[in-house]
Length: 100
Image 1 (cartoon, rainbow, N blue to C red):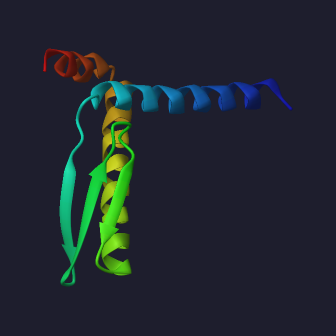
Image 2: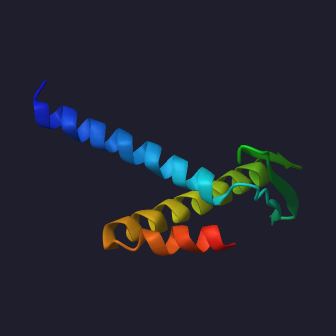
């Protein structure tokens, strides 16, 4: 294996761990509950203390809709965090979280 492949792998692993740690830091204590509906069926998304989502619903399509909602919201958060990292404005996000 070439050294550059190892470096890129380590950089990706470090970035993934960094994103997870920042997310845990920013969402500490926040445990939202969402009530969603899809084609007349209802679904509920609840988070535990580790921010792990649990989905319950009246049908499989409603649960899959809730799963997509959770994945999309997590992806949006990740894209926003990476945008702040790339532009060098990450301190704006972190300082707002500490003030609250």
